[in-house]
Length: 389
Image (cartoon, rainbow, N blue to C red; front, side, top):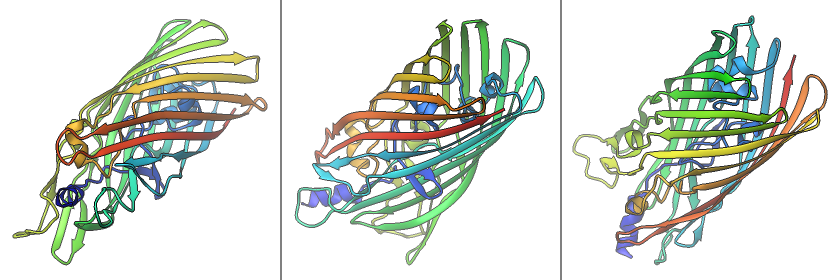
């Protein structure tokens, strides 16, 4: 029992990022594969083949590729169900809402302005018990990360477009376990995203998108023992993609993405009051590894008004067996994702889209005592309305 209580005391809060104080679940580590029904229906393979205004949040150069003459607006909402278990014990709070939206405004044939906002990553848990030992080993964590990204795309010529955004980030965090409780607090930060889309031929184009490390303010907690502070940045990412149209009504897209989790979630230092000797640790050793994500999707036009999509997304869990005991509050271990989606055109200006992403169950067991097992699977349904003219 002592070993289990010590493990609970080391619980860390790699948790949930969300929108408007609503938590979002993890998929590729703590990163969402897409922020709209169209992006999720493509399993996140959209860097070289953008189709909606939400490209401003992924590859801003993609705004130049959309066929809107003056304006494109996409608004949507997602619902995520992420059943989670630790040692067979189930987490409560298994349904989350994820709104997102974006707008692209065409200034002229070369320049497009845009803005997008939404929750881009995260994870959280709400366990009444986590250990097969007497007593309730409660663990509750909530982390929320919201991004607003104004930016532009500029078409150099008929084959090349560049884009960039300035990211304004909001983050909040709460931690509660048997050893200590740190209530919800918040901080702001910033980062940059840049992208390119290059059309090599009429049926083939390539894309790339880079996002800097998102530098966040320190999260601070005032307690009876004094002030605690922790800086938790979001990782740098680099994605490369290809979009190929072997036929006019068929699109094949593939992306590979590198996420540098180890630089921000390897070990996170926690500033403590001078002379503090209580249970709150000086560092949280999450131990996350960098992750490479592969996404492949196919889209088929069914006449002039319907598109069907299917895709697969894979990224090895950034949490390895040696780090399980440090991630009881952050069960971001799913690896394989199946995606399905469709878009229906209701007229010249309005479209509706729907997607479903299933993350297959995956579990990781600690290879050091105590031998805890963390487990996660997910289902995500997204609805989206698009308007353009």
